[in-house]
Image 1 (cartoon, rainbow, N blue to C red):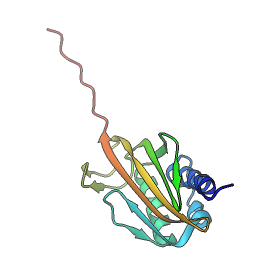
Image 2 (image 1 turned 90 degrees about the vertical axis):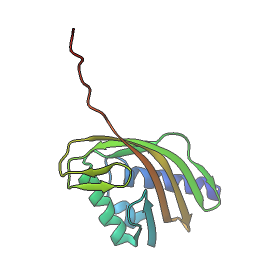
Image 3 (image 1 turned 120 degrees about the horizontal axis):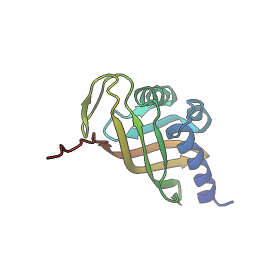
Image 4 (image 1 turned 180 degrees about the vertical axis):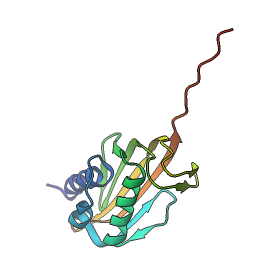
Length: 148
């Protein structure tokens, strides 16, 4: 199997275990390099397995039903695997602030839709960098029009 093919297999496992539903923090130990770097949207970058696991547990606690999936085929070249992601979740956890969506008070119940791209750098079978960028959109409430 080619290096690119192997990297796509690793990337699929990572994306499912990290961003999917169900998810598992053990994916970080299984596939993450010791000094892994996670850069998610405009959140503070996380370095090292412990910090990345804290982020993973925190984002899934904030959006309990968070689920991303590959929106198209993953592409690989050398150490890099790139793929579009799409997904969503319901904000049921602690207060959350993001530059794009602003402030969500704790347990807001707001449904979010995410679209973006993940770029993974893989070396010796381990994820050394996850650069995931998302655009967020809140599902808007539907209002009935009054009948005149």
